[in-house]
Picture 1 (cartoon, rainbow, N blue to C red):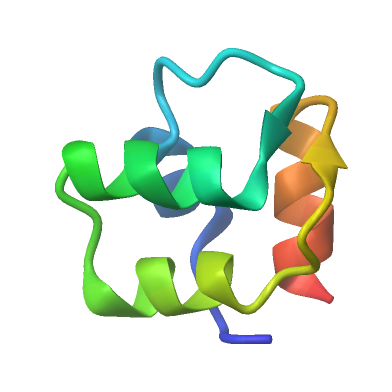
Picture 2: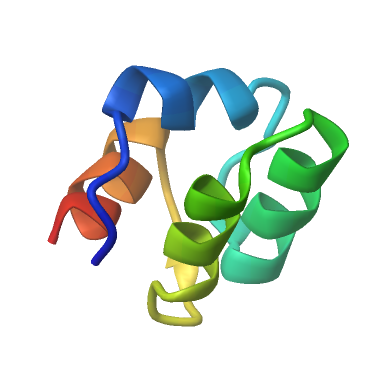
Length: 62
């Protein structure tokens, strides 16, 4: 996966209601003005339900 700063990632996922799908995460990051690298990292994670912000960070970090 992309080398994305976990703090930056979570900043752009503010307001997500968990559990959330990959598409929900990408949509919220877009709404929050995420950079292309953050969006690319989120688009690259498996399409499943994520239960918490730490679940997303762990998956993106690989």
